[in-house]
Amino acid sequence: MWWIYALLSAVFAALTAVFAKIGIKQVNSDLATAIRTVVILLVAWAIVLARKELSGMTSLTKWNLTFLILSGLTTGLSWIFYFKALQIGKVSQVAPVDKLSVALTILLSVLFLGEVLTWKTAVGAVLIVAGTVVIIL
Figure 1: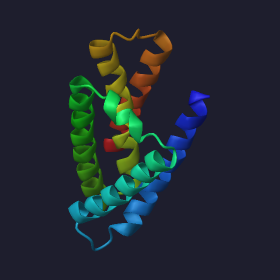
Figure 2: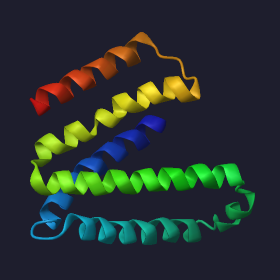
Figure 3: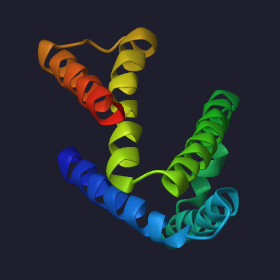
């Protein structure tokens, strides 16, 4: 079941890139990121409230909050740089280079989370890096 959500994520990420490229024409990329963030904020909180999941707030620890805040900060920085890249580059180049994050995530998951690196995952990561290099050059 996880892979269905992952595929849906990929579809919406692709649409995000195309919609963002159209939406940032003659608009400051930071302003565009801020508008997008407000929309995401409203949608996320609407889902939490609609599903009556607000009670989960009481079970959050300082550790949870620290890493969720760090995740939010890094997400924000990622979006700011992504929108800037989209504004001056082609979607067909920016989006695949952005997906280098997949290979970096694999590396970080091994180093910091102790996940096992299988040969399939390693080959996939190497191919992602190779594809990124091809697109950049």
